[in-house]
Image (cartoon, rainbow, N blue to C red; front, top):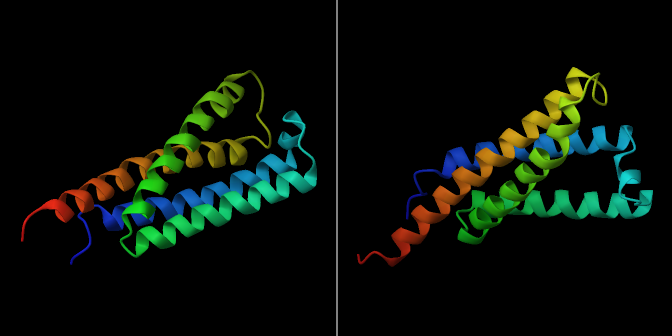
Length: 137
């Protein structure tokens, strides 16, 4: 069976989502964001490892055409895009530089956009795969 129409776009956006996630996590560490949530370094490292491991696992699953991989990327993308919209955007709109200035802002915006793109394209790939699985042959 051929991959769904949105497969390649979903994988490219998910790889960008993974890359921006890693960069944004590093930026958050540099500016003590975990302390805002009263998280220790050890707990934060465990959470970062679990998140990145799950995200990379979802990319691998979706790359293999897994419906669960597409759906997982779609859910993760929605959650992270919402988190960026609700936390980072209001902070960036305040007067003065945010975190490290333009590089930090580019990482946050890139994460939000790539997460949203991953959510949309992965959902479309999941839907296409789901529709094809119920069609009579």
